[in-house]
Length: 191
Image 1: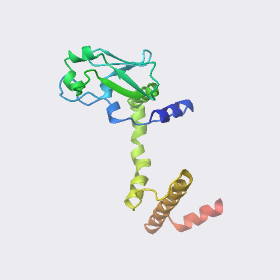
Image 2: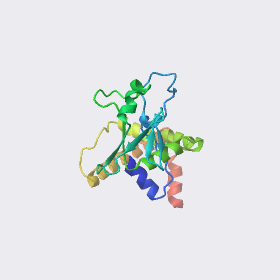
Image 3: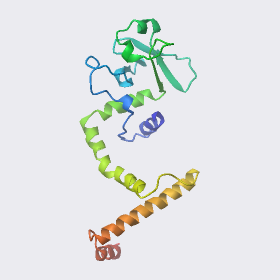
Image 4: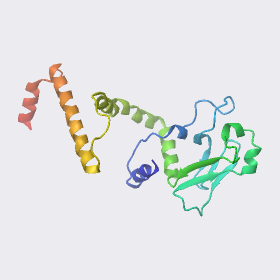
């Protein structure tokens, strides 16, 4: 979310966060495809705080708006005559394209740009073998949702779930002899 990206930025944390599918460029180009436009097809100019459509038109926001979400709108009359209209806007009532976002769009765009680099892709690739398997294993063992409510109670419940998961891993490792109990006893004496 935008607020997460803002917090990471504010605390100067070097994060690698995947974005929505609509935030990512499509694999096929606009000219050879009949696909609908996604947000990534619109270039974002952070200095002017505008999106620019594939036809070169600007989508601007209303600076006087008090809404938490920002809406960038294209000129209705220009959109009605646009050659990309059928790929861009399905609206029958309103001809102009609208992109909705929040006040953290600059942080979102910066993360999109960062995640396109080879270094970021290599770091993010490691996630699927480090962070994701325990969640899948926990779900596979039957945990699908929290029974309790409230941050403190959910935290306690999740700690219990993780402890049970780790005990299962330990028992499996000991039974397959990938770790030896003697090694654990020696490590305990050394500590």
